[in-house]
Length: 266
Image: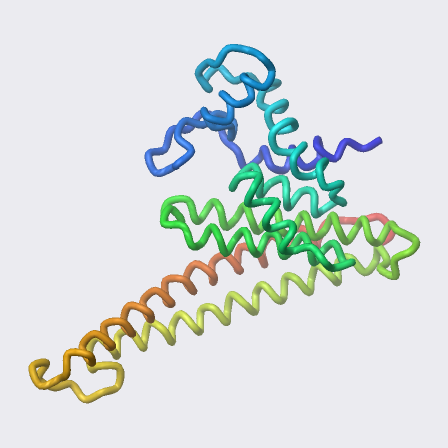
């Protein structure tokens, strides 16, 4: 019997490094992706005294992931291939409770590839809203893109192997290509919106958003504040769409890799 944990964990672990103590990381000291707090919880669970996360062994790390992340997500909810990876990796990176919340919000379609994709989209939106995106965003973007492409591919392959499904193995690359094209189009769209917002912000700062520039003392106070508010909104919009443009480009690149993989029956 295939151990789905081993398959999914091997993908997740590629995104987790060795010992890290980044000042911007709220998780603090981390070793092989396991935070000090998580290691304490694990040692309590197995009845052993707490110790520095620096002493974490490879075998312990795998047991931590299986017990504290895989168990409460993929096993607890009997998740199908693809959805299990999307939920598990989200749990490891952003917390089990958030991963389960995204799973429940994404559920509802008989097409498991759509569920897996939506989990990743919800996760990405959350991560882009965090202040520390500016520090970790590039890595997060590539990671979520990779997980989305792989989880969607897994779900499609599982569906294609089911005789009750109309999807055939030969259809999988085409379905992956649809995701690639959609991501590339969204990247271009985000770039266009970013440019529009940036232009609008510049216009607001220079000429009052299209209003003729005049002596500030002659302008009503409410107009000053409204223009300031508009400027802030446009700047934030431009920043958001810069993030989205890159994230969707990373996603398109990740789907290219999955699309070109050889598959049985394709």
